[in-house]
Amino acid sequence: MDTSEQNNTFEKQPHDNELDLQAASFKKTYESIEALFGSKIARLIASKNLIAAEAKLSLSAVLLSFAISLTLVVIAAVVWILLNIGVGLIVYKLIQSLSLSIILLLIINTSLGLWLFSQLRKIWDLVGFHTTVAKIAEGE
Image (tube, rainbow, N blue to C red):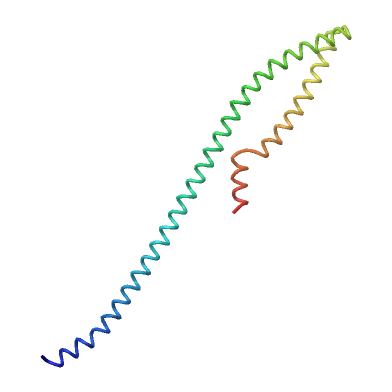
């Protein structure tokens, strides 16, 4: 056996080990980068799903509140008409003037309507999709 070939074999082996270590290190680095991007993508998907779920929940809440509000408006309108008729008859019996009874009912209904409108504006400032988004943005 030729000793020069044996020497070349022994000399190449450490060099090959160094290349193998570099290849293994590169492979680990590549796998780490791949795992990092995978976790970032999973986080973005989870965020997107959370936002979609929040939007669906807000939309459902708005639709449900609209349906309940419509039902309450119909019920309140019937009750309000009956109350106005009753109060109008009582006031008419007391003052015996149809025009003063109507004017008094208009004043009462207008002032109550303005108060309810101001309450509605305060409520809409507290609820809704934009308020939800603002609260989420404050939390981050």
